Image (tube, rainbow, N blue to C red; front, side):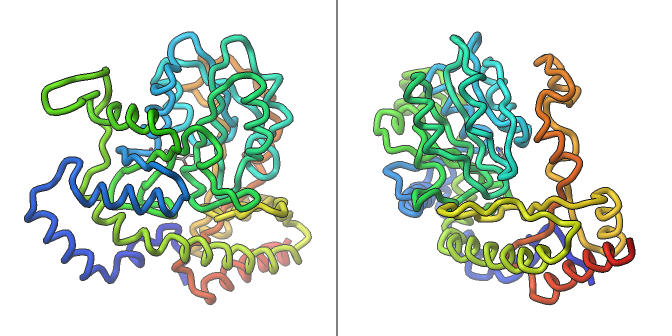
Length: 367
Ligand SMILES: Cc1ncc(COP(=O)(O)O)c(C=O)c1O
């Protein structure tokens, strides 16, 4: 049996209806900021319980445009999680600001107890990352932000429909940023992203920023970017968006199934599953002994397990300019050596989940 990490061939194996929609759309020629995009934005805003949703060309740009909208730039510092995907830091870097890392805890999100000591007189914003499908403790983040007059831009790229006390990821901050990358829980056939906000002025500014600052065809109000969500991708998004809740619940079911079985293996530690937090399992990550050997064993047995991530960002060549010393982020370091990610997507069969569980058990029994 092979358990693949990518579910895309399965997800798009039966797309006759979607192809019909695409054919109809192509004939309209409405390719740029077209009607299907407006429709997608309305549906996305509704799904998120948010007033506005703005389609952009990636999750990275969702963060970049949000930072830009608040005037965050050269000379400013932006606090974010040490264990995020490089895109969060790339967005901060692109606007010219300095990323300042805060270590994570075992929920894979920023340890909120460490945030205040990272604040300086140059700090302008906090970008909490709701990593792997968890949520950062947004009650605490918002408290700290309010006290220190900081903007909060949520990186919810991996956490669509996650929630804390029933309030959805992306609706706690001033903006919430989402990715529609092909391997995200809500995906399209290319890069794509969405920003949500309840602030009408911000909504207008972000719409200008994503489209060269153009007020209309002939008038440029502010300097902006070319960062529109392609309308043809919005057609794909419109087809998939009704499935988003089901996708989340199937991933949760799969994760609970793994948890039940893996918790019986003493070489495995299941991360905390905090009460009141809905985790949507973009990634299913656990702590394991003999990680590298287990990973090899899984690969040998055709299970595409992965590590998110084996080299912490602050130790990467490209980020040497931040001058962090080895050991500055001990929890992130620990995770990089002891975590493993198993496929958890909505298309996995019970047989496939059982095969993963059986293989892991077998590995430890042989030890
Ligand atoms: C945590 C995180 N932030 C930001 C991004 C950027 O999203 P995108 O790939 O759509 O630019 C991603 C996804 O790749 C991500 O996982």
